[in-house]
Image (tube, rainbow, N blue to C red):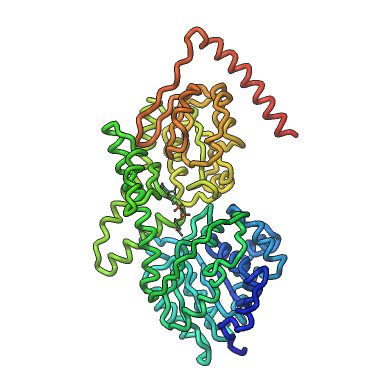
Length: 508
Ligand code: UDX
């Protein structure tokens, strides 16, 4: 196959059209692994004009994707996948066929934690062999999965074992920083794009792939009138440093969260307000306001495993990373500290009806992997509580790992007869609750907010006692005694009407 000239030809450069990416010669890209990183990367690279084959060794997932069904919920992803498939820029294939004639191959397979906390690199090794055996021309091999430092060097050695001697496979490390729930937005508006290379030419080649992001010559699929004109930083370094940037960034963010969680415990103990403390801290640009939200701890498929893997890497290299070990311990203790808050409010948990709002590890995703919410539900059930749970997106994923929980179709159904409503994921919809309707449904007007997501004054004004993290509890505003019995019967009557109404709407 004639090697590609990566330089956009002069003619292309001078000719400007409505869609600048149309001026460029699309790169034939293979993205291996259709998980959060892979499917998002493949879809967005197609959206900026490249021809992309996204591969996965899970045939069922491939068939679902070919029928336009997404394996997970991610805002904007479904419509972008459909759009680029219809435009012929995105296809789903097996790994073996996707690397044939590929000019650039992004490796986005999972690196789940092994028992000892190290990252499992077997999927990466398998992909290296397939690329080595099937590549038909010079190509870039781009490591995008989160991997321990020095993986790139191992990967290069693997490739050289299998690849046809006449071919050149340049290894590039290109760590991903997208967040679940805003992955598409993060792809199009990255703070920085980090590249680890061994050859200048490889850096220039991958720069061409990202050119539309660097020039900001694309139509933003997230914000209709996108005003964002900040260009991402283009960071070129060696592969080891690029790999470390990812682990260090995630571990630092996790440390920031454990730090503010630690401070929130002190605020609880001495009667201070952690949100004011975080506000004051965050105004210092050396600290910054981001990732200073206290709560029930960090979860998800990245922070817990990346912190663990980073500690293991360092220890193997003879370095003391006890600081990060403490970050993990602080995080683990969040569950018991929060359950203790529930216990303190309810006195007895056994036999109590508790509504759990939120199951996903964070809002705008259906991902429950390493979600603190699951540990809290398990802990409450172990103590004999009757848990009714609701999540706007993650119920099915939660049911798959925690089948013996009562899952509800909406927050009100979950709160029916509850002695406490416990908030564990800060979904936007919980901020727009019909508090009077909820007041009529609960047995006891008590909100325990594990994410400091709700407006304490609003909740109290609606007659709820409000408990949160690192802030003083807010008492429910008084309801006149004389009215109590009247309100109770009123509520019970209306509650019956609500359920009838609910049944009706669901039947419709
Ligand atoms: C993270 C990194 O942010 C992203 O750059 C990387 O590519 C992948 O890992 P993600 O796991 O999607 O992304 O979630 P993130 O938004 O970082 O939240 C991680 C966890 O920290 C969540 O459980 C969240 O609830 C928690 N968190 C986050 C806090 O408890 N407090 C905060 O202030 C921020």
